[in-house]
Amino acid sequence: MRSAPAIAFDYQPSRLLIAALASMLALALVSINVSGLDWAWKVGLSAIALGACVRSLHHWAHPRWTRIAFGEAGWVLADRAGSEAAAALDRYTKLGAMQVLTLRAESQAFHVVILPDNLQPDLRRRLVLVVASQPSSPELGSPRRLQ
Image (cartoon, rainbow, N blue to C red; front, top):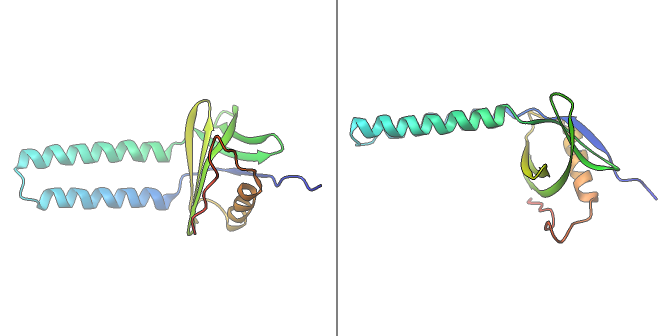
């Protein structure tokens, strides 16, 4: 019997995702400022948009887990200090070149967004094979694959 495929990779946030978020902020700020609102509303809404974007950018640019692995023991996440935590795959979504893994470790969900700029093509292909090799758990729902 063949063993389950194994994979391990260092997770770095996608620069494409961060650039897209920054672009959306720029568009939001432009649309607020060209609207017919009073200047006080413009300042307030711009501050809210800027604050939300900065918080989101910080969240995506500094993930808690920086290493992801799957082997015989299942999914394992490791932080910068090397501390490891067992994880379970809650959901998998593939849309074009984007793959999103939702892993649950320590009662918290960790969303791994894989785009062409943050993982090598051969590792992205192996990741699809690893997820496809897993039996689906009824209590977690079947992993989804969108084409």
